[in-house]
Amino acid sequence: MSRILPVIVLAQFFCTSLWFAGNAIAVDLAAALQQPPTFVAHLTSAVQLGFITGTLVFALLAIADRFSPSRVFFLSALAAALCNLGINLGSLEAGNLLAFRFLTGFFLAGIYPVGMKIAADYVQAGLGKWLGFLVGALVVGTAFPHLLKSVTAQLPWHYVTLTTSGLAVLGGVAMLLLVPDGPYRKKGQRLQLTAFAAGFRQPSFRVAAFGYFGHMWELYTFWAFLPLILTTYNRAHPNAELPVSLLSFLLIGAGGLACVSSGLLSRVVPPRKVATTALALSGACCLLSPLVLRSNSAALLLCFLFFWGLMVVADSPLFSTLVAQSAPETSRGTALTIVNCLGFAITIVSIEVTRWLSSYVNTHDLFFMLALGPALGVLAQLGSRKAEATAS
Image (cartoon, rainbow, N blue to C red):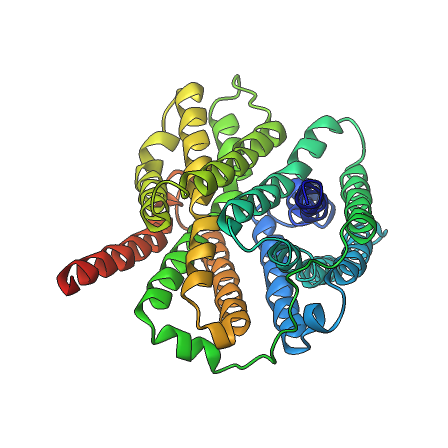
């Protein structure tokens, strides 16, 4: 048992490095395809849409319940790695590129959620702590392509996709060979599309879901546009020469530590309180961003982005835990699937709205609107707390 969960975490990290592989080389791809810098928004949205579609298909067919989850993880890792390599094909057009990113996201649905299921098959108590590690692995894996781009800056951009695909294969093989089916694995029920509505009638589930939705409105948009923030600063201050790829890795990857820390903190402090605090602080960063992004101080900018990178994801494992704990027992899998899909659908709206606004709004002011998600999420949590206090 002591080696099983670390293997799951490492495999998650290797395989989720595929998620932002396109983002790390977005500048190169945009130049090759004669697309604007904001083309990165479409790359991200394509992966998110693929992930949503894949999650629904995997759930409808009950794939991870009918077949060994480790085998599903392995085969999904292979398929996602191959689709990721599709970027390297010569004479690639924008539509084909987005199709490959969509397919990569589709098969990531057999990696990230299935990895969480495998972990749940091994632990019953303390799952929140392990969700912190698993989401942390996703965060670092998401950031990792930016580090690869930084290290291979003098090499063709194809090395980023080659490396991430290779890591994904290694992660899939490790899961297949080292992680057998867990002792708590249970055969799941069929997907019931009415389960989300049934769960949403329960106040605790509804509040947790609203918190998760508010968090997702901000998270992936911040990650997707972080390189643009750094690039904009370099353009305004030519002598700064901030290493965009390396800093993108560090600022996004730091969120992995926040996930682990919040998961551990939730064992002594109520998870909702930790999650609400993190959500409020990340919302405050959205509101302050127009002022800080106009600063001439690189140190102030980097400290601000580092703190924002911590807070923007620290609540992720906690809201996932709260949603899981408050979902109806008879239809928990379906309710979680729908919440997950809606959350990622929200990221697409947020990313595309931000991309659209970038044509009309200065980059310094672009992220103010991201505060809408955290604000609604925090209001939902505070309203629940007030209702609970009144009832008691």
